[in-house]
Structure formats: C-alpha cells, structure tokens
Length: 378
Image (cartoon, rainbow, N blue to C red):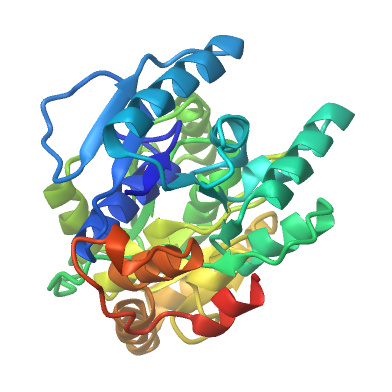
C-alpha cells in the first residue's frame, strides 16, 4: 500500500494542499489503497482512504512529528512505497526512514526548488532528489529548475489535474475579471488592479472578483484606493466549491499574471485548469508553470507578469473581442478534459513508482500513461 507523505493537506488551504488531496482520491479511484500522512486535526471530513494525522509543528519538531506519523502508518499499512509531496520536510523524513526493500518518490512543486540560500540546503535538496527512486515534476518549468539545482536524475512530468464536471460558461452581463489564489505579491493581483483605470475607459462597468485570503489583502485594498477603483474590486475571501464554480461561470476571463518574488514562483497553477473547465480563457505569467497550464494563443495568453502594459493589453483584448475569448475558452475546456485527467496523472504516478497488481485492489488499466516520460526516468 503506497503512503502519501505530505506537510500540505486540507483543512489547510493552498495549491499543494488541493493537489495532494485530489491525487490521493485519484490513486484510490484507480485501485491504490493509498494511506495519507498529513498534519492537522480531524475536521469531520470522511475519506475513502486511511488518513494518519500528526500535530503541525515548526522547526525540528515538524520532522519528529512527521517521522512518528510515518512509522505509525507503516505499521498499519505495511511496507511498500512512500511518495513525498515535497523534498523538505517530507522527502527528507521518508529518505531517513527508508528500508532497503522500500521505494521512495519525491514531488517537485516549484518554489521549494528555487530556494537554495545555504550550502546545507543545496546539498540536502540534491541528495534527497537523487536518492529517490522516482522524481515527479508538475511542469516543464519546475523540471528546468531541478536541472539548474544540479539534480541529474530526470523527472517524470505529471502536471496537475481537473475533475470532468459539466460546467457551462454563463458570463455576467458586466465585464468580469476573476482571480483565485492566496493573496501574495507574486500572484499579480496588484497588476490587474492597476490595469482597471485603463480598462474602465472602454468598459465603464468592468468588475474584478478576487477569491482567496492572504497577507497582501490590505496592500491590495490600498492599491485599489490609490488607483481609484475600490468600487470595482470585490474581495470574496474563501468560498465553497459551489460558489467558486459560479464565480468561474460568470467570469469573462481569468487572470493570474504571476511573477517571481524572491524564491517564490508559480510551479504550475491548478486554477488555470479550473477556469478552463468552465470554458474561461486565462492570462498567466511567463517564467512559471503557467506556460504549461496555458497554451499561449490557443487556450489563453501568457504575458510578462512584471509588465503592467502587457497585462492591460491582454485583458483589454479578451474583454473587447468576445468571439476570440470564446474560441480560447472552448479550446481550453477541450484541452483540460483531454490532457489533464486526475486519473491519468494517478496512473502515471503509480507506474512511476513501480506499483504492481499485487499492491492494487485490482489490476488497473494504464490507459493514457506517459510511458515515454516514465521510461526516461530509469
């Protein structure tokens, strides 16, 4: 039984948390009796897989608590495969507790690979990835960062996934831009707000909906005040899945023109795919995983997240040319449902760590597994 070891899982909110939860469900759906080891307290949710919780801690205590929980899970679930959501701390803990007949795999998400501010951290990063039996990278951008970090073992690309739900696009009567994410500088919310004064000349009733919370909320409110567009920006905070789907449906376009901020970067961006499923074209930032989530000029637009003029021009194009925006949105939905299935991703992960039929509830069909990517990793 494979163990999914992570420091990022609901009820905590974030892109990695959502990724790990959906991957766990997908592994279960294809026949893996996966066991998840994650921080947090029971929150009343029920899962079809076993969930071993540990106390969320910081510093060295975090490693100790995670290690104890992993050992409990191994006694309960048996020995086999441990898949770590990131190299630190999960990959380090899994590697130290490894036995000679176990396999380990480590995910590379993006930002955690860029942060190499000490010799010890650089050495630990390379050692953790190189000693793993498989490396999973969620974008070509992240794979390039692994190479720059000195990791020689080739990763297996797995991207992010979507749920194949019927979600008709029903755009609002008012031109509406939507962003979803943690309110931090690198996401580019401020650049979209700064574009609103120009957009309002051509679209007097343009509205900007922001879903999410984070440390930059007050900063973004100040930006809206400075630009004179407070009445056009709606901070919706955290909303449930039904409300989020409604927000995607009414949006004319989705915008998250991400940029690098120190070691922080967008490794992929599940939200671009969520917008795509709703038939909404996206605007993302270059030099990030958005370049994999968005096919530039076909399902959306990829711009320089630091260039306010480029962002403003992209927004104006999608708000003004509704036929072009609809063409991109429809193509985005087709591509998301065809190429980014969670079950397809789970099958690639299962094959990448060498799960055998005896480790599954039943032998699963490999389907559209990226066999070439898997073969290249060994």
